[in-house]
Length: 182
Image (cartoon, rainbow, N blue to C red):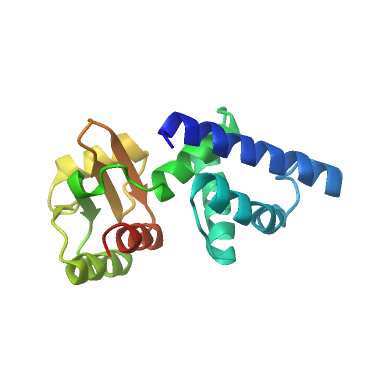
């Protein structure tokens, strides 16, 4: 499935889930304080069947909540379903060219979340360019420009066709590396 197709599939899944939530609960999907739990229960099967994205329930709840936080912080005026779809593609979509992708990790040596990612990289024997944002101001600036904040770790994936993905969140990076290269 190409990214535009996947984007459309995911956007449609999110919108359909919001509609079902409104019908079941009588209100906007994300106004319910427990919306992410309800959405996760509804989306788990369709995400795996239609988008090839498999989640544990808690991981999906966290991912939905994180997508909402990112939406509010980075693009509150954008369409939420399209934003979520893009976030899920950035974080969880399999690479079509994983063997040929170049990887770069933006990290800080003192960050315990980075240590988890570094351990997996070492265990899998992956070639990853290390970009210490505390030692190299230009790397920190790249991260700020792309993500709007300097939080680490962030995995940058360069595909042979010139596409780039920025993947934050240590657990998402670990999951991606293990499922793609493990």
